[in-house]
Length: 151
Image 1 (tube, one colour):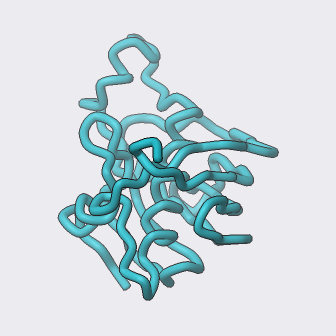
Image 2 (cartoon, rainbow, N blue to C red):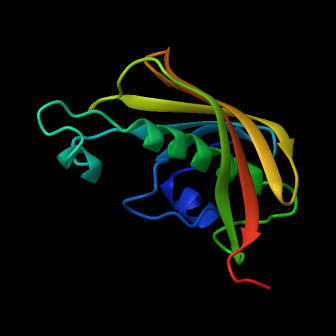
C-alpha cells in the first residue's frame, strides 16, 4: 500500500513545520512501513543547525521514524486515525539510538519501521533510516497513544 501526502495528512495530525514524512512507498497496516522524507535546504532547522554546514538534527530523524510508525499503527482494520480521533501519539522511550553519518540537504531519507508490539496504549518498534541504501540512524522506539482531552 502506498500513500501520498494528502493521505498522510488524513492519517496523522502533524503539520508543517513538524510533518516529517512526505510519502509512503510501502505499508502493511499494523506491521511495517517504508516511507520517505525529502530533505531540502528550505527546512527551517537548517537556519541554525548549522548555518555554514547544514545537518539534519538527529532528534528530527528519530521524530520522522516515529511519525512513520504512527502512520502504519493507526492504519489498521479498525480504521482508527489519529488525525480524526481525539488521540495523541507521544514518544515515551528511545533505546539504542545510533547515528552513523550526517543527513544533509538533498538527501532522501528512507524510513523503515517494523512493529515489535502494538496495543491501544503502548507501541514498540524497530526503526532504521537510510540514505542511498546506507544506514544513517537506527533505534528502538516506544510510543504511547493517549486521549488529547483528559477524561
